[in-house]
Image 1: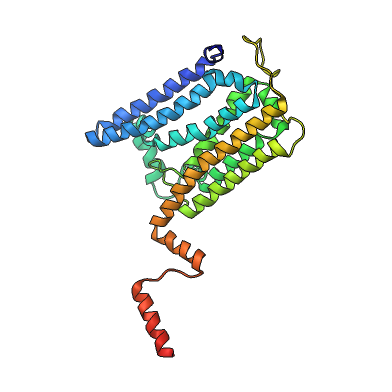
Image 2: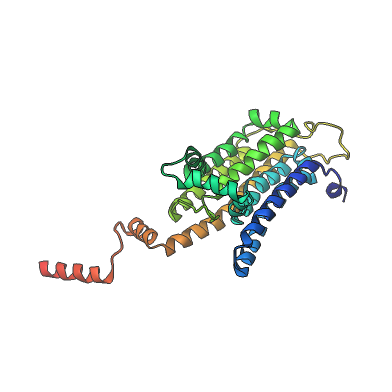
Length: 311
């Protein structure tokens, strides 16, 4: 039990998380005062997803997971998956942006929205926000963050400093995850701009990059690329179990490989189901499969009559 009860730390992360939740609650109360009870209950239930994402993020740092992530690569990969995939997906699914906007005082909120969104012409802040949440930036940034932090020349020095690991590595993991999942999950007032087929392509490319990283770390290197165990600063409160560094790296690569498939395949299924429901996407699928666009029954009858007249 000592592995789970000892080595809790970073209480400031828990305090910041509670403050963020309080800001959401302030905006939610302001929003629900002018909503029906049904809408208020539905909005409340959905926001619990965002709170779940914040809880996953906070526990990844405050709990002993952070301590053991500084000791073993495979534990770090569990933390990596939690912060980069699970926590952002839950947070985005809860549609937290509207409650956050309504947490701003009414007069200040109206002035800000009127200046940025209502006045003629595109305000520079609006252009910056549009660029940040664009599909290209979100997907490319996610994959670049994932690849760069796996480079041993960057990974090892940062992991030697717990404050850099939390403040730099984990924060970019979470931020890139937010920008990535916004492209796939409806999160009012933001809507995914990619078509379902484009979403499927982006998911497949991202999963392929994860697979390449996992295969490289587990099968294509003969010596460990990362240094763990002695990097934790300060005295250790308990004796760690020994694990061969190469085996540690291979287990971590397997976690990345398996978890990459676990998150990718459900998202692919959702994207393909949406494509089948969309008439325009169904036409695109038909052109891909048959080499032509789909036609209606009336168009088919006209084409058949025209072909018979030519015989």
